Length: 548
Image (cartoon, helix red, strand yellow):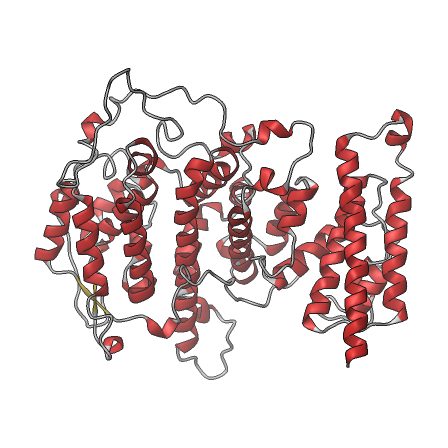
């Protein structure tokens, strides 16, 4: 399978990174201003700190010649703390919610990404998961960053690093999370089990995926701009040098040549809040899903006028918390199996973010397999995760609708892998079709290899998945203009629909029981609905042909 298209998924207008040429050159923050920011953060006057940090970044943005004017790059440590304010339970869940902190934090973080860019702002250091000890030992080298004006920043003393408060100490992200994929998995667990926490985690995850996309795109631009020696091609080692140093590759470095670690990374995109997922990706912050317990008549602490909120890190564990109780989601209500896809994968935002994570993993495995794992191994693990999804969730994840964040090239490769393992060996394989020299799916391949066949098993589950995948393949061809209305296509569609419905009639388990469970009824509904949608697509194709 080949993945040759390297386009970031369409992002929402508010959260999308700017064009690569829009980043302004950066100069380091002065010692005086950095110390002011440090004092505000140390005193936990977070509103003022975030306002000052944001002003550093947006100053001059409205000037007609702003593209040629430098922007001040905040200290990476301060950027890290701003991201913690976005997700830490104290400001977002456990205290009286002050919307100013997370809202100002995301505004600042978005401005850093869109104005300075991931490289100029040194987001690689801000969002690093390296140990604090090694970070402090290399403190001199950490901030000696060559900015575009030739200057550099330095911050060599440990005392400048220390900041009071829970957010900057025991609640610091790199202290609480094992790695980035731990946070991804926990975020998706929250999307199913803890909707209250998911409200803040999805904002953070959407931003971080934008950072990874923008970081890769900017490095790709610089790699391609590098002069190549005569006779060199774009696939040589040097043409990928900067992308090998990308933040995404750094996050995947611990999984290189480690099958178990690679599988854990892929599983983080499919975390669904079950016991296994919660074991692999437990909560990030202590007591994150619990509410503080207040005795009768006891008043909650309110924010004081200076903006202080949390107390020192020494007081972190003094609060008592209510028992966690049952999860907030309705997953337990679906024990009879009659559940929507969102009950398994979270809301539609969660599905889109899961697809974006899969896209990023596909990109690295296709272009830099030595930095992660081979595309075949990664796709095999994606298959193992996707094949276990209930039909509603499977249909959402493998959708090619306009709202889907799964790039077409990734869908084509993954859907082919799924179909080749679900269909009987008697079905022709795409590689046997004359003239096929890529991973693309054409109308001829669809007519001969996929559309006319039922699954190798008689289960409704497998046949419904085959129908859903074939339906989405047909939709892709219709949308891209790669499909014509022909008698052969009509016959292939009808033959497949009838074959799959006939196949489930031979399910011995259903015949022996003589009854049909609610799960079976729902799966039969999905199978027949998919077949009906394919007939509708053929009808649309016919009208398009007649109109021409």
